[in-house]
Image (cartoon, rainbow, N blue to C red; front, side, top):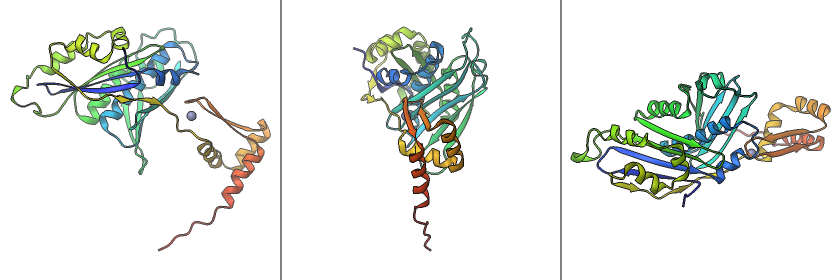
Length: 295
Ligand SMILES: [Zn+2]
């Protein structure tokens, strides 16, 4: 049975290679539940979610990591986020039909970069700009991994409407395997992994995938770690957004539309503020005690 919404690490004995598999289903379906984007756009989002979760897990960051691509193309926005607790959310927006999907990503998005932000909640988030190379997100992510970690990394990603799956192989630094390390293992293992089909990656369970690819190797599997969908939006955060836009602008929207509606595209929650709510928001702002500074 295919186990879902989990990621699992493995080591290949006598080689300096580590690997990780990921399979998202309920969490993935939740991400696209309300999406109006086309099939190809959704596939890109599924691939991005698998890759960003593998990245969060590899970098062992404290906080969250976000991939963002913004452009003027037929697909003009893609956001995929994973926390260190493997909670994921994401959104993709498409503005017009995509006639040909067999073109470089930078033409699809009309953007030549993706932004990877690591936010640990302490200090300023760290932003990395990655060129949007090739025609698949795995190529752009491989470049990011290699840049940030200086480790050769390969990624295989597959996605359909039910599931998003991925396989990562990474060559560890130095001579970690002692005298038995075989020098050609990286080439051999990546070559074997390249024979995986999308269908196999989506349908086979972890053991079947590993057996199918590496049945001549000795594999050490770690314990699987669960992945889930979670959106951290809240009425409180939405209130802060309205506060930061200022009382004047908030009142202008109220005058025009009767209420302020803020919709979270990640989880499809609607936050509604009427004139009483807005008045209270700015009153509570004023009634806060003045900040005291002590030396
Ligand atoms: Zn939300």
